[in-house]
Image (cartoon, rainbow, N blue to C red; front, side, top):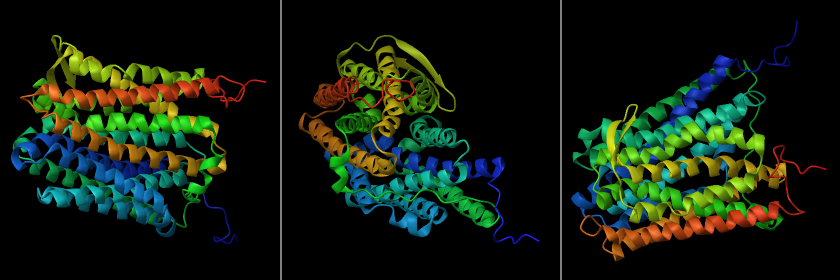
Length: 447
């Protein structure tokens, strides 16, 4: 009789894998919803509680400051506790952060809550990635990651849509944040169910071990090629442009363009909606045709004029827009086109940029490369909202002075110009004799 302790265990069944994916993805949904739930109440905090743009910018930036701290500490907790406990722990931290921010309008408390969210949300993403790697390694791993990201992005879109489906809550700033706390509680429930499901199957199926978390090593920075650093530069300015703009977008559309909150939320939601639908399609397309650095340059070029168009171009006629679960609205044509183009760029550049790193860095250095890239990204995302908030305050931006938002839009445009420069430098490097194969469908230089 075969000893069960030495017999090879079976891999998880498809039903077990996809159930694990569902639980992990719902936990991520709650994480993303809480992150984006603050944007729709910016105007209410300003009007009802007297918050300034500088204070709101500091609250936004606190998350990224915490994320940098977490990245520097590395994956110690995840390695020591395992994914099932880590996902539950970090989901609980996100829930506590959401409740802290909803509890009071005291600036210092909200700042602490946003910082706490960064301490929980970023490790939760890492733990979720490690968990999926265990369940789907050798199976439908890329597809599982894509589904996970789509469900997570749906959390971002739902936070914007809440201005429509939960519009009665927006009589005050607090109720929408308590709604976000409730969504975070659903995420915690999913994390606990994942813990239970993994615990129940331990010793019965082969979950293997996810690859150990690769610690960030500043000493290894010199080992990366120039092309890698061009991608890092593009990553920093791209996310430091899009994320802060999205953070202020609902308030901006209300104050500068006179839209109601529901319409502004629907416009803002077009970015994550595009990412949900189009990002995997762009990824498949680029895998077939190559031209990765060229596509990054094209996306940067498309983004360059968008912030000036939204500032100076005539609004154009109102166009009817309908989104499932969010309702319908009449949207100025210019703003709609700008957001659709920005949503396309938001889908194209990440779909090409992140996988391209795998062509530039040795496999045993990928973890450090992605950690370095994410750290630099979060530094940019932390600093840019502070600058934009300072511009808005210094130029008295508001409904009585919509032109006060223009300096911030010029700042975004300058960042987009830097992105175009980095992508051009990358294209030039990858078109020369020392190319890494980014321009070819196979990812390898012929010959």
